Length: 448
Image 1 (cartoon, helix red, strand yellow):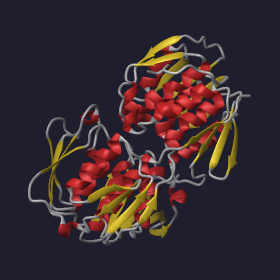
Image 2 (cartoon, one colour; image 1 turned 180 degrees about the horizontal axis):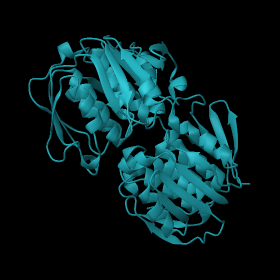
Image 3 (cartoon, rainbow, N blue to C red; image 1 turned 135 degrees about the vertical axis):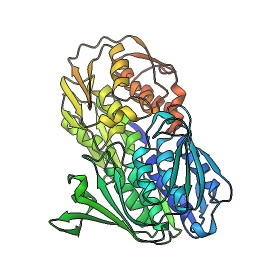
Image 4 (cartoon, rainbow, N blue to C red; image 1 turned 180 degrees about the vertical axis):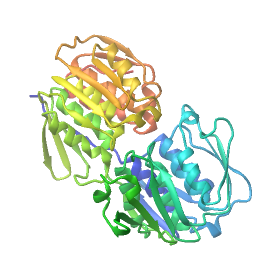
């Protein structure tokens, strides 16, 4: 077995967004360590600066002076916010800005104007926000005129994304009255990300009460206890309160670690990844459970986890709570014996690209037996892949580009049409992936 490859996990993108927003809405100054440096975070920081927050890098940290409440930051002119291709920035900021009286235009680039926001704007309109869609009904670009949030009871549908709720929760402490959020719809997409929002808000002095229905009454419950409840049996209560400045260190990102975890199982060398929180609320921590179910050997030592080369087998995986790692698991499953069924992820079609059809189309080019389903895909591994040169399309999607790199560990020479799209969430990915190539005896530049 080859020597262990040592890698440090990049910072969590999801927590970086939330930390920046809470600090920018707070009174006083905050010190943030480990905020991810990526295109998506640059967009969020730009939007927050437009609201009046000061965000300055100093000695590898970010110092943030928040706006301290809506009464100090009401804009006089229309504020036009370009969220680029960041769905997180779009959905979180579209809600947050409405807490501050003013007129806001939210627009983006790439596929952003094909990504829906109707469920979020429906909830904001219940709060007195006026919304105009400039092109397609229910999609950016949109203009919102807000008198500030009134509070009261709000209903919201999370079948497409839990980010709608996260945005509403982040804005709710600035409302003029207590906000009670009731969930509607049949399912909740990516529920673990709500825990990240609740944790971040609490760190900056704003607790959120989570309750579940008990007959004709409501009782307090934990995020974990609410995980499998019907949406209509869940509500969240946020009282008006100021965010307070403070210090926060952003933990490692399980989403971006997934490629290296998969590499440890598929390749010839163990991969050890440091900086991960074993008890993290991040939904993509489920990658460890997936590796275990598929037969991988995994060992922990402190905050570092090592995955060893393993004979993998197929598994049935409900990935509703961790859609971002579906492309990773699909590529890894190509090297497993037997059938891997990925389900519960119909909302993947609304990501930066259609992350159901995209992996199916591209992995098929490598000879993978893979079939799309409405809520996921089936990968049938038989150990018969014949390594060859493959030209693959990333669809401009960072997660597609990074997941396809896993094919290199099976002897494929991979050429991507747009390897630079990884800058959206992990600008240094190819440099770090170089360690995997070197540790597995693979020549450089396969995915360029």
